Image (cartoon, rainbow, N blue to C red):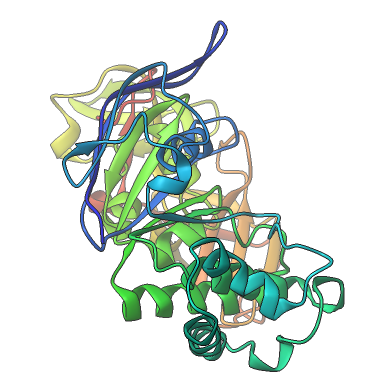
Length: 357
């Protein structure tokens, strides 16, 4: 295992700043996920840990030792790439064994280690095949095995599942989770997929424009987003976000735009004024057959199996979505008018700069 620390880490490519003064600690045995959109700096950060990129300024420490000047091979780090990076002319056995050969491990010991790791990731029947004969999921299992045999103190995984279909992603995601539970080694995992981040991470670090936007447990990130960016990025469907302004009517504050008006919970009363964005998760909106804070017409009913999605306009710039538990297509129809309630404790407000109020 390894404890990793970044101190004022910055990476520039000419006039472009990819990572801005990053300060972060990763605990021994932690599964940390760096998540964010393309270009946010997450892969650059991972490559600096691996030694494939040099920081412009700042330090990377592993177990208290500065490793900036260490070659990648001397960092005791294993990296799993999106592209698998297997040797096409070698058998799967030889691909997995390669790192052990480079370390001059005796042949019999190599054989035992390859056998144990192949069983661990369920690829024993594939050992005599070549990479061109494997599926995408099988190739990624081999890539994991090739990293496992070297027994690194830290695993770095750079979007390893992004090229797989949805079913294989779920299967391999569970495999990665099981490996971490078994090994209790430090894992640093990069993804743009918030579902992967939510299911795998002990702690999530959300990056945006080279900076940490927010960090915390998966549920903390989901339930308590600190900014418009995080609120919008996490959730499937993502949080409903409606632009408007705060107005005062009859000594009460309300959120209003050209299509709707909603009373603002009292706990916001001393914090808000002017233009804001109101946010609420789709599963927190309540449907009322009679009454409701606002009345709206269902645009679309989308059955999803275990849930049903109802689409509205609700004054939003994009479809306003409500999640109803269960398959309830007989209860709701396109064109039907219903009431929508926003529970006080589920409403978020963000100012013009995207900061949560």
